[in-house]
Image 1 (cartoon, rainbow, N blue to C red):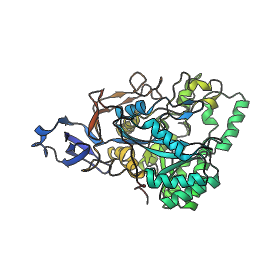
Image 2: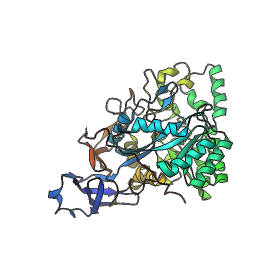
Image 3: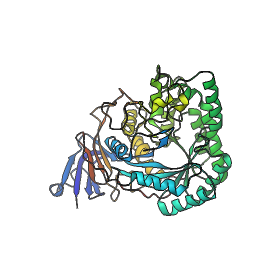
Image 4: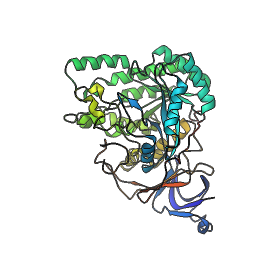
Length: 470
């Protein structure tokens, strides 16, 4: 049995921090003790990691990624191999990707396709949510089968993208009722898609084709209205609801109101909405803004959305930060939208940078160390049925561990990142901290700025029901 000792680090959890040692035996955490507690067994360990002056925390969990997702005539540029490798570089040790059923397709066929993409190709552990793109009796039956037999306990619907993923209110209600009966989590892309399509058509008719119009034709009101409508439908169905990639402060207020009355409604945001904006990024000259096209779109800094989202993270009205990692290269992919912003593939690559960008929020005083661990590790595990196997440093938990050096520096850019992209949405951002060592189920996958993992190490995660409900 392999044995690793991490000693003299500051152990972080969602509730506090303490100096201590972590003893790893094979793939799990065997025990945790005070500094020096395991000194007598150190000589018998296969590896000893000195974490003096560094933080030791659970591996990050990114519960919103889209590896190899077909979109807009192309596909996300990260495979499960390249994307999971990049995630490991950034201190993320588990991802939950989205298997896809489009309108007219079979749910089980969609899931099988995603298993085929991922199996044997992941560096870190992975699970799936299921996108339901066609709510009918067969899809509802499949939801029950996946929940009971496949370890897939969360299902995503879209109020946007008519003809591809869109569900109307009646379909949404039926799926929510099924989720309620199963105890499953319903996830929602909350934007008013039919109305957005009208605004997009009108903008193009006026000759407004630059990337910034992607945001201007998806105004705050389209996210706010859809969020409120989703919450009301979930209330009728008595279903838990998780709103993905929230960018507008007005939409989050609808979540706040629901939570204040005790509803099981949860909000997720992403690094791009905390750091990037309509004015500074999406409105760059020429076609440069295409790099920042994602949905929901980047919002105005002048209107205070970024500051508000940080505040909502502090108050837990936003419970999780994921990435919606859906990368596309500028060359041959984003360029599909030259002269027509509506043809630009929607997505930003962030899976490698989430832990660092959130830690920079610790440095600037936006969140605490404990909140960093909570929104990036522990709550994602609890929200989606992985706790305490994942998301915590505890005896018996998987040995997914990150040693983080607060005295080092991370310079983000295309020259240094490991995602399969020809640009970086975070080019030039400097983070006052750095991922030092990463372990996935007891195997060291990142050490001394070197990748030491292997494709195929990652295992499929069969998840239970949410452990975060009121």
